[in-house]
Image (cartoon, rainbow, N blue to C red; front, side, top):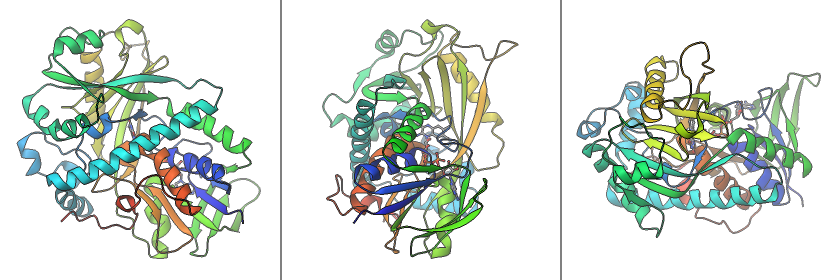
Length: 420
Ligand SMILES: Cc1cc2nc3c(=O)[nH]c(=O)nc-3n(C[C@H](O)[C@H](O)[C@H](O)COP(=O)(O)OP(=O)(O)OC[C@H]3O[C@@H](n4cnc5c(N)ncnc54)[C@H](O)[C@@H]3O)c2cc1C
């Protein structure tokens, strides 16, 4: 029997889920409330895929602020709300070395599966998608190097995954780094890449339609029933409708929790906001040739095609992003002076922020719920490009009853977030 599956959301998670399900013999309809695809968190994020995402942050949610020793004692600003405090306490419960090893192994397996899935899709498409190879994580302080040491050690266990660099070697690799920038060391991760996420998702959508899938835009899912009925409000002439499916996959990012809550499903996510600024490259030789991560500031500076992008910040939704944007401007000017024009009449800077659902253990929510027809692919936090495609392959395997490529239990959507 061919399974008929509804996918809610057309970002990185939803479109890669749809593509994988079609590849596993299902028929698929995607419902997206926006006018087009990739207009949520997948719109202007960096699109960095690979191990650097696993090195720069530990495996217990988003990075703590302030940095250094005080970080383990003082909660960051985003934790000073009731849900934030609960999340922060859960996050701290995952700090033991054994627990971090387990979380790292699960994250690495998922990141590697993503790599395979993205490669499969890129090789199957004739259109060139903009990508930049490699990433460098640089640190300015000893305390920052120590904070990274756990992740770096774990990545080092994979032969050839990283190369340690002193500042001279790092400058030789990335010649555009500003001469006045002072930093203490770096690691290079040659297997990482930045992908133009929107371009890739546009291609995925095209291929989904070619394979017989349907992508409904301007179609908000207003509710779900446990029996697989999806209630849709479409902004075109079709109005509201209720459609029955064999399975429903909720890929609605930060809105996922509200969608499934009426079914008694509590998704353990904290919604936080992150920012990016993008600008055309003015002088190519002054722009980064790899993704450059300032570990102290938790800022990624990257290039895709003719555009330079910097992203970072962790904010409670609704908080003013002014200070974050200031730090993004400063990071671009300090690390890559002259690469782009950020001020004056000629500046064409796009600033953007979006909400993302984070989990306290840093792994996404992927798999079955206690309702057999309702599935989840959400909670990707700041690693959606690194995780979503692999998560979608896993989901398609689980829904169609095939042997999963990776162990699903660490990713189960209803798992406990208490590390013990
Ligand atoms: C500034 C920034 C930088 C980032 N950098 C990186 C990076 O370098 N590497 C990395 O791995 N990750 C990064 N991320 C994270 C990554 O972008 C996200 O994890 C990923 O895009 C999430 O994809 P998604 O499909 O889950 O969510 P989204 O792209 O938000 O898609 C969800 C979709 O669901 C739709 N939707 C919601 N509710 C409904 C409804 N009721 N009915 C119909 N549709 C609905 C929304 O409109 C949206 O289009 C970054 C994020 C940000 C914000």
